[in-house]
Length: 111
Image (cartoon, rainbow, N blue to C red):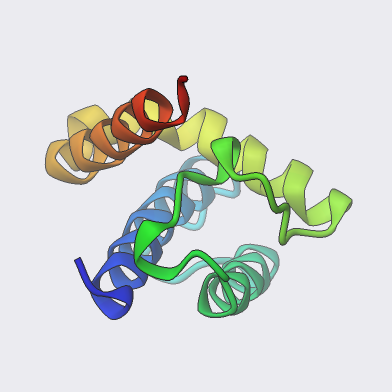
């Protein structure tokens, strides 16, 4: 997988998670994110664009480098905790791809 496709898949997954979270938590109801969620998504995209691991990027929870500032990290964790389980219902392929990536990377890291 190339850097661009790997990062694009991560961004798509994160965008869907953010939309699920914002729609239910902030009652936006539409396709637009509220200003705070849009800002967090923009911040996350800039972190993804700068990721030093590129195509070999692990899921953020297993990454040895924490790109997010502590406050932003807590915010994105809250989004992922809420939206992650709900992704299986609304976007099963994205959710399974994310889970498989986590599973593959954790096996590769074991000695």
